[in-house]
Image (cartoon, rainbow, N blue to C red; front, side, top):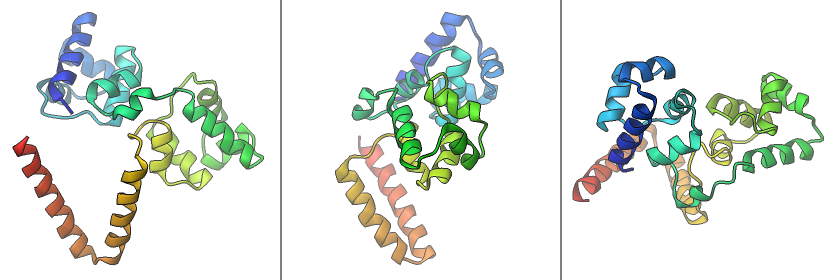
Amino acid sequence: MDVSNFCGWLKNKMDEKGWSQSELGRRSGISQAQVGRLLLGARQPGIKACKSLANALDCSVYDVYRAAGLFNLADEQYEPTRFRDWLLEQIAKRNWNQATLANAAGLDSAVISNLISMRRQPGEATCSRIAAALGFPPETVFRIANLLPTITDEAEGILEEWRELLLRLSTENREELRQIGELKLRRQKNRV
């Protein structure tokens, strides 16, 4: 992610509205300190912060994701109807209706209705509940909703190999491997 692009994008949005850091913080529910870190490039916004910023700045959450570098190239082609179409397909496969899904997910039926009519985009909590109700891993639903980048078939194969390997290791060895991975990433970042 190019943090300077996001910083510039966020500063432009604030300038357009004539907002200070504290005003953006107040309107988004993000602390002024966190807004400052975002503007300095000391912090990358997460999914929740992106959604809060989108609501406050009155722009699409996907615009914020793009500015924050949370899309890969394939995601640039994201089709907004993908989640709705997938959700309708899952409801039909089970011979459910919207109310049945809402009940199974512990959500208000208006939430499902808003997702299907595309008046609202799904968030983390909603996706987690829908995933549990439909028997999918949350990450799968997050990817369909474009809250996480898509994974290529090649990457999926690599992840599956690592998943199998990690499941056979002790907790101590998994932690050691995680630390080695973080070290390698820091070294790689320093070389670039």
